[in-house]
Length: 162
Image (cartoon, rainbow, N blue to C red; front, side, top):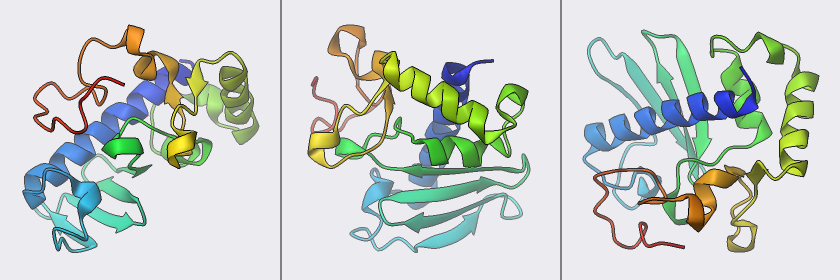
């Protein structure tokens, strides 16, 4: 499996975590946890199977039954598909099937190579979002619908084409 596979698995886990936060809190935009008076940390689910801790503009979410933790930041306009090297490295401790990245230097090399080849880009740096995104997720010609890839998203502010 390559770095794009890792990124897609990471993004899928983040999407699941954010969806569970929305469902649990009733808040359509968990990144606005302060404005919605949501506790900065908590546990929920059957036997507290999930826990979360908001930090700054992100969240660490733990799937206790699966023994998987994912740390992510909310990006430009609430995007949840951004990542950085640290997010991926931390996630690798729990991800299965990525033995080629068992040493951090291998991940660093693949990450830098992907930046140089413009497979991953910092599309929103001018908007103070220093996260990286897969080029195919942020290029308007590659998108079919909502840039956040949420099929039932009703938030017109976030889902306008770029």
